[in-house]
Image (tube, rainbow, N blue to C red; front, side, top):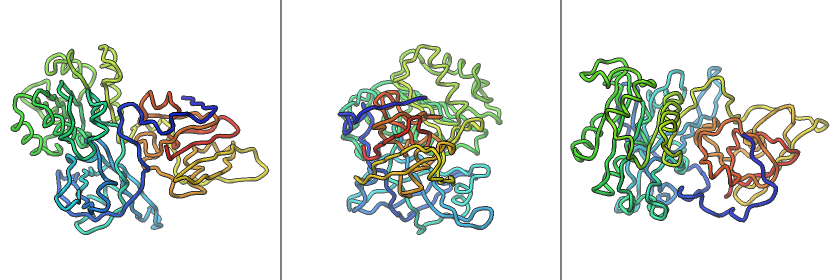
Length: 408
């Protein structure tokens, strides 16, 4: 994917379509106020947000935060780790002006951060938490209201409609927050949730989902699909493949009158759903999707801190970037094929990023001049790309000089 720009845009300060206002991603140290076990391999972590930081942690249902800590690697050397986790609670403020952030962390096979968190994280611990970000939010009928509803979901109006979410495993994390908010916002709203897991013991937020169903019995349809456990209904048993997805859309969901779709899970499932919906004629602007990882080992990943050998005599790209009002410059050797993020981090370690895999969008910047090529993009909306926004973890220069703006 090639992106180019020849001059600064007059839309530098414009809010992108219906997405929430972009803000500078910054870390703040928060205390863990509670750790609750959800399943054998997943926990819910609550962070207390003091009144003076409450505004920095306002969010919309479906957004995420990045967590940062330092852990020893296999050789015992300290290494910084950053991982992004979706917020699983409905936004709220307390009487004293404080608030809280809740995330669910599921242990991944080989995942250093998630394994540590599930085994060691406890009440009273301190972690660096980045201000909420992400565009995995409802945009239906809320062009103006979404913008004014940060941490005030009761102000959402015009959201009445039919919604469907298809989630797998920890993909339920942002979806449960979205479902709670939309169902509470309008008495005419209907929400269908297809939730795939291996077995009943793996279902995160099982009680919360049951409570939500009890609260909205006529408006929430909950479909648990278990791949390794027999259910009474054959349709709800087995892995969701193309055939089963087609059956679910025909038998369990009124797929012709849906206003908005939410897809969250592993790459293969999300892509299958996107392709199937496209084949059925569902407009792309009605489909929201989010990945925690691409799950594609054959795809290039972004770099974050990769060592690069520099030589003043060698050919290089001239990279200029603006961050917090300050201009930074760095030369990137053409032979290194490093990302703009990687180059920028070599001269300024506070450049924002989280996943470095093209998934979360934390490293988003505006391409002001020059041309780049993005290897992957699972975070930017099509209109953002058209306006020149890039994921710097995935963008490599293709012109002699490139300038980007993180402050937009």
